[in-house]
Image 1 (cartoon, rainbow, N blue to C red):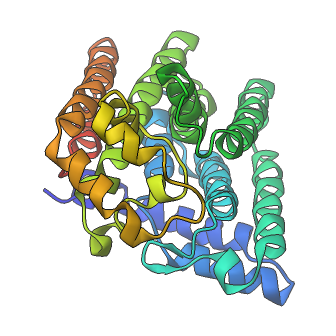
Image 2 (cartoon, rainbow, N blue to C red):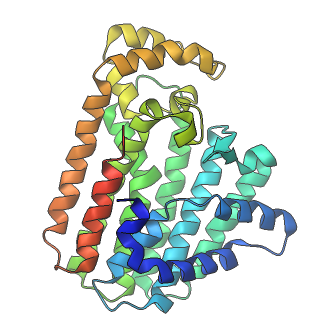
Amino acid sequence: MKYKALYSFLNSDLSIIEQELEKTSVSEYSLLKEANLELLQAGGKRIRPVFVLLSSMFGEYNINKVKYVAVALETIHMASLVHDDVIDDAEMRRGKPTVKSRWDNRIAMYTGDYLLARSLEVMTNIDDPLAHKILSKAIVEVCLGEIEQIKDKYHFDQSFRTYLKRIKRKTALLIAVSCQLGAVSSGASKEIHQKLYWFGYFVGMSFQITDDILDFTSTEKDLGKPVGSDLLQGNITLPVLFALEIPEIKREIVKITNETTPKEIELVLEMILASDVIEQSAKVSDQYLKKAFDILETLPRNRARSTLYSIAKYIGKRKF
């Protein structure tokens, strides 16, 4: 079953969110308008809005209220992507030129900043201090994660703990907060929204590790960017950390710099795929996914719970 078919019953409400996203993102200034429209039209899985909607079903579901949470979270995600492309000096995302590629780094950074500001503005429609506290803390952590991503580039001696902390801030946190804020905005109990936070966190960790695996095992067509781009950009992912424990692969990896070409890392990619580091990384992803499923078992049985299970299983088991 395709990903979008798993939550097809949400299609009408997701259309409302798409309309709100366009209203929120598009500026009266032509350059910002063009840049943000391109981001929206590039699409994406809309994982965060979907998780917001499903999690809000553990309380009193009201699309006219919860839509603001979904839009705020997706807008923060869009901002982080724009900033990431500057950090990684990325020319392509989802097979299309990035904002920094089409314009320049300054335009991209201000576009991301504008989106962050708009996300906070959208959340003023939610009259709940707890929701604002959760969101503001999340934005702080995401920004810290972006700084750490810059600091850790080409540092091949970093620890597994550093990597896990980085992907928490890069990916897992926003998914966790999407689940939590969906529940908070619908008046679900503290016990429920805290459990949904941890469900989202574990799913998010599994999701990012799977993404890091796919950077080596997928194709340029599916990725929308060259295979091995993360390593080429100096981002040390879980497969690379496992590969660094193999002396002959480590000798090749540590030679990589910001001047290395895609052609020059072909040997490293072959060595990684010939080793067992992909399987090792997949096991870690599976461990996080199991923890997410364990959390779901403690939540009330409803359609939202079964859909969360199906989505978690899908995104954690994407083809390697």
